[in-house]
Length: 168
Image 1 (spheres, rainbow, N blue to C red):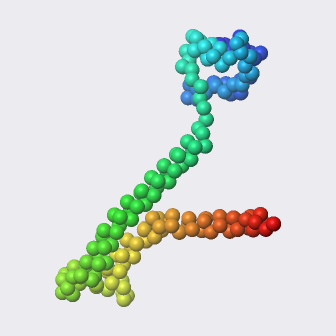
Image 2: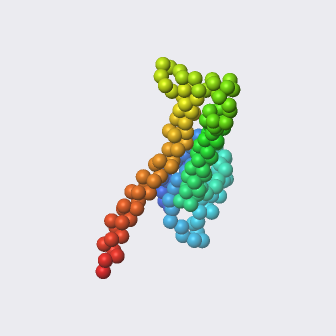
Image 3: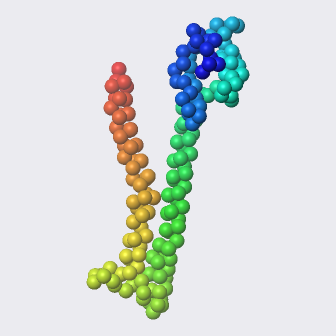
């Protein structure tokens, strides 16, 4: 930080550079144009020989940028859930509709899926449908189960705050 020593009375270093893995310097200053501006600080850091710096002003992400990233993450998660649902829907349709309803009773596929297993009255096809439907209901449909609850809470909060303000 020897490069900033000429400005020691004019700047306040909030976070110094401690390592090359975290090369962000945070400082505050009060400009007094034209004698002292941010350009003076940038040129002093750029001209430093030991160690040489690549200087740029870093801005924190804006709320809009953060919201956009959150929106992209939610869209990606919804796409994954949709893809899992579609992939599971194909064998579910084949087992539930084709094998258990459309084929003749004598077909070996239908006989296989209508056979009772595990000492009960539940057929192999029903077990297969149960096993296929479980991840869809617990993972893929979780969004549609949770969002209405959040919307209900929001609507209830809006009703409580909206009633006193609408009465005059």
